[in-house]
Length: 376
Image (tube, rainbow, N blue to C red; front, side):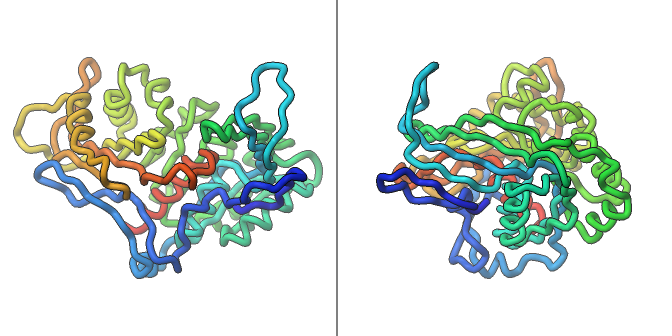
């Protein structure tokens, strides 16, 4: 989210940039995403660029409801990550809104959706700042629970300027949110008109109540499977879509490779329509289930199919490009077979001087997926 405040050292500060500084507002000339292309008969490649007129053509029914984390991030940038027992100085310190759901829905709002968020903060300076920041970006915070006592969630983040990576130390909010704090009437009001529901895996008890009501209303659910969390196994069977970190599919399925883990997830979660795995600068991989019968042909080994798509990537193309397999029977040895298509999406090539850090990158990706799903 946008910076709440910045505390630079006495020497010239680095430029303070919003977390989503590379996401263009709907009024800008262009933006990029990776959509689900039309069903191909042979392997295809799709380059993607969205114009402002396409953003303006979003359907009026574009409400997204999120349930999850929103808090404050304290980002200290250092020349390089400290060693144990080191004493170092930061080159800049930024205080800004954070949390998976807060970040993703900020992105969705900036892309033109109308997000609502169910979360909890305390009535402290950090909590009030989070609410103000979300509201200024167009996120509806009327379904927040505000505790009169306790503390808002916060995360201390060490940004390594040498590697452009970040290390996070999270302090949960207190007291934690419980389902009884969200009345059924408020939940029904939050779901009214929603096209999609997004759960970041936090606040798992409240998220489960939200998910169960969502299923009753036949609204699709997208889950952020960043890592194994308490309650996530109860949420995943209710999801229509999942976006995972690179580590989650292997940890959750114990499959030998990411591609075979995707097959395993689709087999174990029959309601899931697609699973995406984010791979940082290497882009993403998606396995999409198909209800159509695959053409009568040999089954394709998923690892070999993924490798063949990777070999088709053109490193000279800077904008995101999607490489898709044809509809086929995709097999993972020792796991099973699914009918579907495999996709490889590349990441935009950003010049090194323009890189800030990876804080919130996965959340921004999910915000773009929410936008893409609402624009189908």
